[in-house]
Image (cartoon, rainbow, N blue to C red):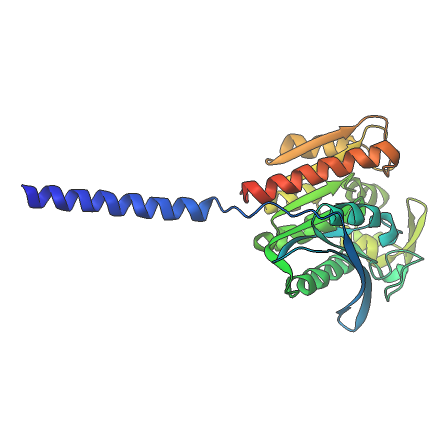
Amino acid sequence: MKGIEMMMTAAMWLASLLCGCMSEKESPTTPAVTATGVYETREIHVDREGMDIYGMAHIPSGVEGKMPAVILSHELGATLDRVKGYGEALAEAGYVTVCFDFCGGGYGSRSDGNVLDMSVLTEKADLEAVLEEVRGWDFVDVDSIYLMGNSQGGVVTAMTAAEHRDEIRAVILIYPGFSLYDNVHAMFDSPEEVPETHSLLGMRLGQRYFVDIWDQEPYGLIREYGKDILLIHGSRDSIIPIAYSDRLAETIENVEYHVIQDADHGFLGEDFALAVSYITNFLNSAQTGGEAA
């Protein structure tokens, strides 16, 4: 009897040990972020199939060990200057941040490429190239890489995260341009009807833009990601109706949703500071709480 009892005790001990190991794997945690408030800025160049992507990296100073990183994607027709303020604020909070110009993403772009050749798929390829570059930096924690996208950059972020789920710890969407899909479908009955160039939101775009976005239904794409999402939208957004983010928050799990009252498309002053506080709190929670699947 004693032998049987000893065997049962040993079996229970082994089972509890294995369960403990599994729990650790299922609920990974990382050290809290070290915020020194100081960072250095580096100009970067990333190759994407022979095209040069221009960007800026903000790297916290005085931090030992590997650091979490956030890659930021700008709006349609813009440059990294539209998201640089977020990158600087998050670098002060202890995150490596990377802002870059999409190829052909805007008329002031410092990256290669022409606006008429740009689409959500070319921008996705740009973001994937930047992601691969950042994953190779020896000071970046590859288990703590986040994507953040504003407006069309939010659509591109959703598309990229869906295909790189295991590489992206969490996603931040700022007034994501999920309405662009509906806008294009309202203009044409089929991709075959798209002319050589056409205007969208006052910007002349090439045929490729409208054809490439045709099958990129955004809600289905972000649902494939399935991890934590921070969503922020202004209540008076005059470009991307807030109803699109309302729908996202209602239909997708793991969404933390904040509406900034009376804010339009692009946050300034107190609205910007509030958005930064939401983003920083979300990132810090993701770091200390581990990945939520």
